[in-house]
Image (cartoon, rainbow, N blue to C red; front, side, top):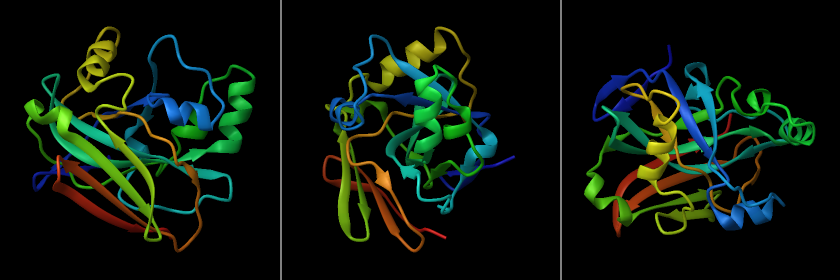
Amino acid sequence: MQKVNYNGREITPSKVICVGRNYVEHIEELGNELPSSMVLFNKPNSAISNRVKYYGEHTRFEGEISFLIRSGEIVGVGFGLDLTHADIQNYLKSRGLPWERAKAFNGSAIFSNFVPFNIRDIESLKMRLYRNNSIVQFANYELMIYKPQEIIDEIESFMRVEDGDIIMTGTPKGVSNYSKGDIFVGEILSNDKLLIKVEWVVD
């Protein structure tokens, strides 16, 4: 089973629960419709990794604010990369088919370490993603269509969130394909305080 690091301890998530289409400008850049209800999908434990691999020219990166859950509440925050086989996803979407082949493959959920986080500071969160020293994505609490507590409530209306599960809250505009040797730097901040900084080199 794949693990993530939370506050110096190894945690084994049973699953990663992802929110799709949670930022208006990202919806527009991909030509999607604004959803009438929350778009949710899962990645299995086998998707979790701490390395970014190159899977071909049609694979896309999506940076996300990610939360570690315990007893139904947010206890930690981390930086996540949701990798997507864009060509496969487009084919599946055009036929109304599930996205697992495009979204849930091995190594498609890459995470930094997770650090403890006080839910009272939730509105102060923001993230930045740099690719080869240029900023490519920015997100914060205000830009989210569905806020974190709303996401948790919706998930728990039909599916149990186990201790150690991770919620990826969606990606802002700026997604793109990537190449071998690219350097990604992800940051999570609370106001202007840097909580997490992680670097990945694509192999």
